[in-house]
Length: 562
Image (cartoon, rainbow, N blue to C red; front, top):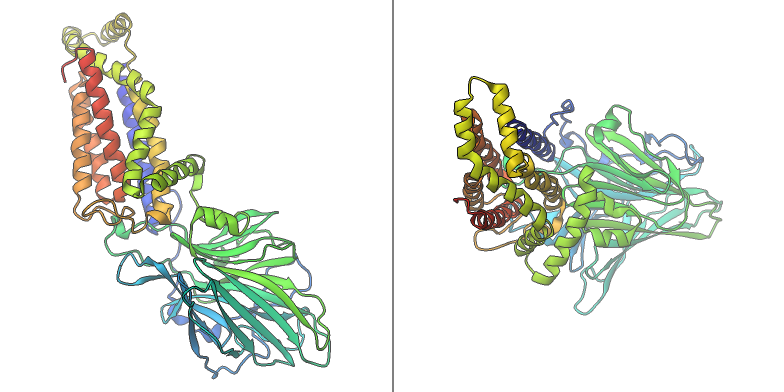
């Protein structure tokens, strides 16, 4: 039974190490241990903004995903737009008047982890990176006359472009040049403290004939994951899923990886009267939202080498000559704040993806957030979380520690018995079981604390890795960001020392090989923590300290030498 206990214990450690290692590989953009490596995409530098495309006209919702086609009636290739920046207190959006697209989004309340002197950029357009939010019009039927698209030249209206002191919003309007007598007017409203921008889209038919336009909104991005911050964690830092997401009542939350588009294997619900599309990356997301019960078609497409788009297509019906039709949409560009996202649109909070740990991660996040609300510091909130978890499992842990203390007290007697019966293994096992029965000791009872800690630890790993609130959150002194590794490895060193002390308090296996493994395995386990986020190391170190205190106390109560 003692051998069984040791085998079970090390099996738990080994499986946990394997899962954690695989998690880090996936979070750092490396191929999973359980899936083949994906072919690295080409650089986005090969794609220019002028090479982008619009979705193909589609009269029947629910058909195949629109294929990219040239934009009829759009501005000449040589045309150049003006870059205009509009600021609220949390966002600085840069618009290109060639297309009326958002080509840069700077989050004024979030710092870049690689260079904390700079603000975080979500949308951006550089020679090596393309990430844009676009909208435009296409005809109801392929072959219709040209309409304004995201390649048509727009004219900005006069007005304030910075949120004034005391004001609640700043409004910016762009009006396209007429294409076939039709204009598209986009009105962007940035509100104080809000990452969701109201986008009013007006189709003005100044032509002599009725039209049947469709409005498209799309997000275009290259397939290269964001560069990891230099040196924050093992192999460059944790990075979550980077790719597309589509949500509807029919299909629910569906992730579409760029490689699925390359392989023509993208599967998602094509049409519904509700839903949204998004581009997701670690801690941040961009999404086009429209919460009214309006028919729409979802699409994904490959635009160019290593350039992809996802969006929605809205049929606007007939717009008579001289008439105007309006569709209100929202563009979200910001952090994955669960509570705020859930208020914006059904299912939008799912872009913060905990994976299979969701069932435990969500309540842990809820509890951690409330503790932070009381304490005001994420580091101390993690410490308080450990205290609450230890209190909740106090009696279960106490039972396990009593079993381990009794095992430690019995070790000299068992060691003597093993020496006397080393030539008769069968009788040795029988005598060992007899001793356990007489002393009412459960040889596998000491595994319970670890079996309890491992799933909580993995779920908390997901919470700390996924929660943007932990990003750049300080604790004390040298710990200025709990989402990355301890820069001086102080916490991992303390955690390793506490792990070895806890091992010393445990009963030593009679078998010499098992006794050595008992010291080697926790040491190897601790080495991994040197590269884990400081918040996660803080959790485990605090848990170790409280476990040591509880075990020390129980050993003293039972008269077992510490």
